[in-house]
Length: 152
Image (tube, rainbow, N blue to C red; front, side, top):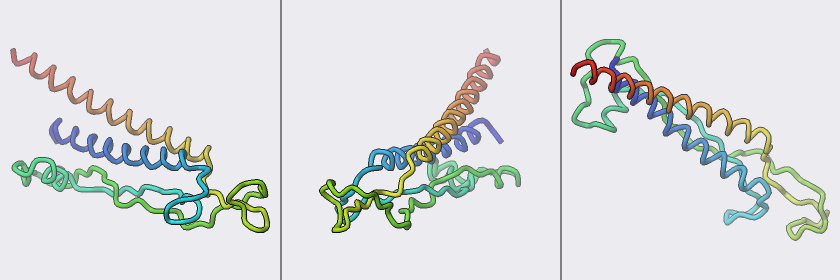
C-alpha cells in the first residue's frame, strides 16, 4: 500500500462523515418541526455506510489509474461510502400542549422522534472520526514531504 492509497481511504471516510454530520445537523435543526411539505412532523434521518474496495474508489477518482493494484493486499483494501440515508419509520412522539397551533383535538402535538442528546453524541463521534481522517491525511502528507527532502 502506498501513501496515496492511504490518503484515498482516509478521504473516503472524510466524505462519508461529512454527509453524516450534515444529516445530524439537519436532525438537530428540525427537532421541534411539526409541519413539513410532506405533511406531519419532521422525520429523523440516519446514514448507513458500506465498505467500498479501493479499486472502485480509485476508478471513480482517477479513471486513468484504475487497475493498478499489483497484489492481493492492495485488492483487499477498503474505504467507506454512504450506502443510504434512511428516514426513521417510528411514530412521532406526542406531547400534550393544547395551546400549540398544531395540536390535535385532544390537545396533543406530534413532534419529531429526535433525542437531542443522542444526536449530539453521534455528532461528536462523527466529528472525532473526521478529525482522525484529517490527522491520517496530514501524516501522509508529512511523510511525502519528508521523502522529497531526503531526495535532495
